[in-house]
Amino acid sequence: MTEEYLKETLFAWLQGIIPGLWVGTGGTRPANVTEFVWHMEPGSRPLTPLLECRLTSDTRIGRDYPSAPDAAKGSQIYTGVRDIMLYLNYMGEGAMTALKAIRNATHDRTKITYLQDRGIAFREAHPIVDAHVFLGTMPEDRAIMDMRFGFTDNWSTVAGIPGIIETVNSTGKIDSVENIVMDVTAS
Image 1 (cartoon, one colour):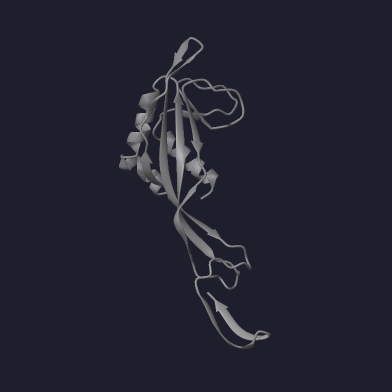
Image 2 (cartoon, rainbow, N blue to C red):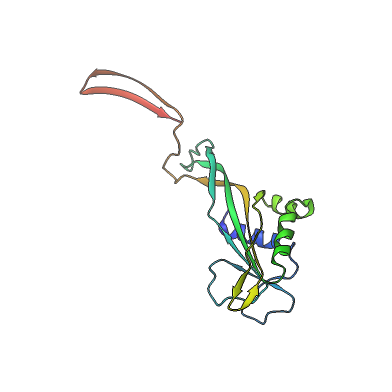
């Protein structure tokens, strides 16, 4: 799965949980929306309420499993389990309520099925942290939460370069140090 696919799918899932989740495109912000940004997007800080998310790179879980080498292509397909973390930072009124709704959606079959149908499995949600701050002299509600998701990933070796060699069979004879005759096969 690509980062873009994961972002698009997770954003669409969040839209089904938080009414009025909106991605600003430089136009006029509609009333009664929660603006959404991915962490480190360029530009000035959007108005609140605001949901900022950050997606980590994937983490390999266990060993990737190879398929049989494709002799025609000279490559080999591997399949492995991956985990990613989604960091959520909600700023503005109703921050705790919004993150509770997201956390609770992971136990709602009508909400979590959307991700499962697209190959993403919910693993866990860490506790929600009330992280309100003062901006100058004005208080701002903030809440943060981390969530873990999993998926399977397929990748292949470069054509002409073998993947993991599971077994090596060799036969032959050694007449002397200068005369070694071997037949080797690897799979």
